[in-house]
Length: 150
Image (cartoon, rainbow, N blue to C red; front, side):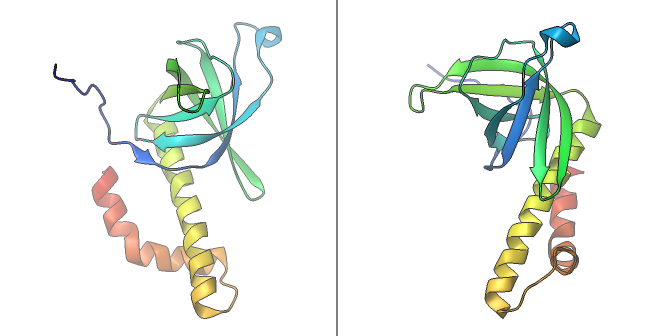
């Protein structure tokens, strides 16, 4: 038996914190925000773990915090399956449009720059600012980023 891959975009394993809120038809139907983390990201969507099942087709708002900011992204649940290994639900969501997808890619880059800043701080023994790390990151990796996503 041959498995046919139906994914449109390459998935990148990445563990980032997130919150998500399932939206209802009315405000009173909306659920409280739950906390989780990403399993992987792609240009079209992301996969995260949930303690509870989320209905396929549900509209959700994904909140991705970074330091003192919270980025919000609109998405729709395309699949929710029980993971036998983790005993959690794997929730796959699709972004509403390319702007939402691009927002997530930029958030991913911000997290990678923060990790790069921490590495530079360890290597130099001096505190490196996010701005300084960003400049070095862009100089080193912007051409690669452009090739991957444009």
